[in-house]
Amino acid sequence: MKPRKVPNPLTRADARKAIRWFQKRMGIQDWRLRLWIQDSAPDWVGKVDGGTVGMARRWEHSKRAKIWVSASQCDDEDEALSILFHEGMHIVGLDIGIENADREDRIEFAWNQIGDLMAEAYRAGI
Image 1 (cartoon, rainbow, N blue to C red):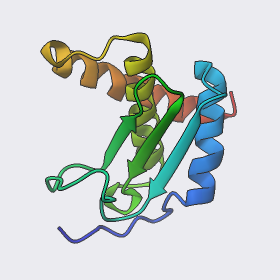
Image 2 (image 1 turned 180 degrees about the vertical axis):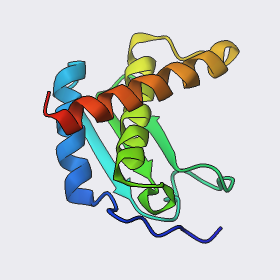
Image 3 (image 1 turned 90 degrees about the vertical axis):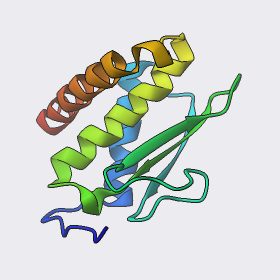
Image 4 (image 1 turned 30 degrees about the horizontal axis):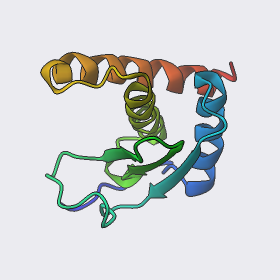
């Protein structure tokens, strides 16, 4: 899949600033989150289908996680921020024990909604 050109792509520096904001609001500011803001999925993600634009992985029993976002496949920076926060919610969900394959569709819906709201709040400076 050829990446789309985003008018205002989310840079790594922008993503780091946004994820720090997210961490404070979600009470995980002591976590070590590594970010990959790049077109192709990093090796730790593995092969992805054409519609996948982000992924999160958490080390069990630790406060460490990884997030990948392919910002160039997003329509704009706001969508990339929403995906970043959506992936962050997966980490929070795993930490509090609410990630469950039986409810995956409902959890994805919730994380989409929360990701969008967090992006709006971040943009508004809340």
